Length: 240
Image 1 (cartoon, rainbow, N blue to C red):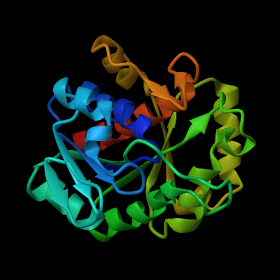
Image 2: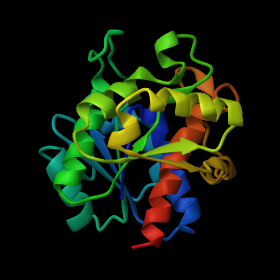
Image 3: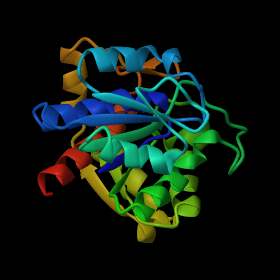
Image 4: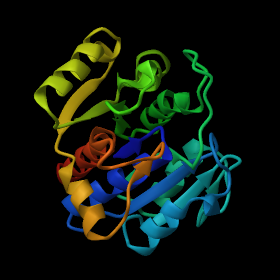
């Protein structure tokens, strides 16, 4: 399984969920793309996750550098994760930082859709992290972000599983209503999973969660969404 996110802050919950639900047995590789910061060393999070055993190997692709394995592009990065790193689950997420213009296609994490295609071309199982927030004041990021909608409804030409977290029923219904009005509803599979195991794993290991200046307590749904994608990967792993 390959988990594909849009923001660097989604890495920790996604990876922690895999570790928790696999009882530490799953080997997790992190692929850092070159759509945000290029040096892996810029990420304090990766350093901590690696040291605390949440991720097992780092791979940088394209113009990004500093991973334990370096690859020319996402395709060869994915191949290296399987053939060189012997990973059970691969998490593909950009490094720290992110660029966006507030337009439909003007954001760096539009690559999520392209990476879904790459995973399918290579015969993998693609799992997309939903960018969800009820704390972000910007209308385009309220509920299910337009970044997720654009990437999966318009850019991804092949199928993935979109993970949604188990949250307050009214909030979940509002997300499902958003999805129903997009091509995601017929192009992809949607699964609702419990993201709490990933959050508990991070809390027990003393790993803080922050995104856009907000902590887990400020924006629980954002982090639960990433952890839900990790839970989907762990569940897929059990059935293989």
